[in-house]
Image 1 (cartoon, helix red, strand yellow):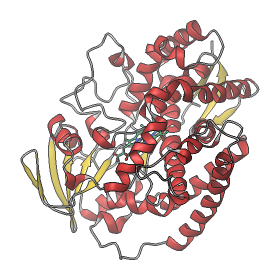
Image 2 (cartoon, protein in one colour):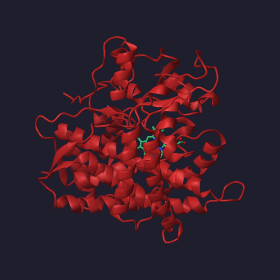
Image 3 (cartoon, rainbow, N blue to C red):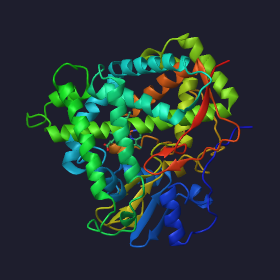
Image 4 (cartoon, rainbow, N blue to C red):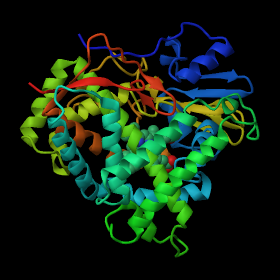
Length: 450
Ligand code: HEM
């Protein structure tokens, strides 16, 4: 019998608007009914805004792969949440700015550069392996541990390998404070109210942003001073734009903040979920451990080990299916247009929801259960466009190969030696504000693996 990990209650009927908004603000995953996990396409209206949900391979392809120009722009919720921090950074830009930045960022994070990017992951995983040896028997916040691990990896990748753990902690803490401030859903945007509508807490937010920018600027100075020839920021700072110039300083800061934000919480949440899922499925945990021990024999994993870790990869992919770190992908329609035969009006919020697609009744067997073997190389491939943790189409995650390698390297290195045990009676519930995580903390006891 497979193990079915937790998911938020699914309301059985249509919710009144007030209740819908209350639930959505508390947890964006708590509003979907059983019917939504079986539908191919549906539309609804929330106050002034049309909501269009694409939930089949055909409609997902029409929205994100054929990518009508009308759907280039990210949702107003996402833009309002991130714009103060990342300005015109790749994650929320569109049009010409997006095109120019995408070329630059893709070049430095591309899968073809993995062998140059993975040594930092191996180094940080080995450091954590050492640190954990001294902490066996302790109860740790596994979510915070994984956030720190991922932050160190992205910080050293961005700003250079000489960067100390304190700098990574400083950036991470500043970003978490920001996230906590914007974590509440931007209600005015969801309801379709205009951009000038007052949004609470903007002044405090701007003060926080000034502090983050000061830290990031200092790190960029270090990376550009040349001491850190291997940093992504160094590489992006030196890259030539089509006109012959280099990226202006503010744009470089926006892309540094974008990469930090996009590349640390996503991998941290995936790792935390993987520890939780393995703790509830001893057979999968033993199989992953046996694979990692056979390949690594105690050392930290590196780029050349990835191909020899198919079960580790399957566990990571099954984790991404059940708990996609970005579970709702939103766009704002810029004009009236037709999507796979359905009319969509200007201003509509168009959603592709990995949360629904990854558990869709039509496309998956045992959709809510943890079955890593479905992702082994000899299993049938996942249904087309129904497994999209990194999105798809022109705006697909530029860090997909980076993120997958990072999660595999950290998990295999640590799981060959340690297990994380959930204390009896502890409850874990998925919580989604900007990203999907196993609650605010994930307290588990760290033990030596049998
Ligand atoms: C498990 C890890 C990760 C997951 C699940 C993930 C997921 C995603 C998703 C779903 C999007 C698209 C969002 C949308 O369409 O609205 C995205 C975009 C992006 N991701 Fe990732 N990501 C991960 C790791 C990373 C890493 C490690 C980096 C950087 C090194 C990164 C950099 C980016 C960037 C720059 C974008 C914006 C791309 C664009 O708009 O053109 N991500 N990611």
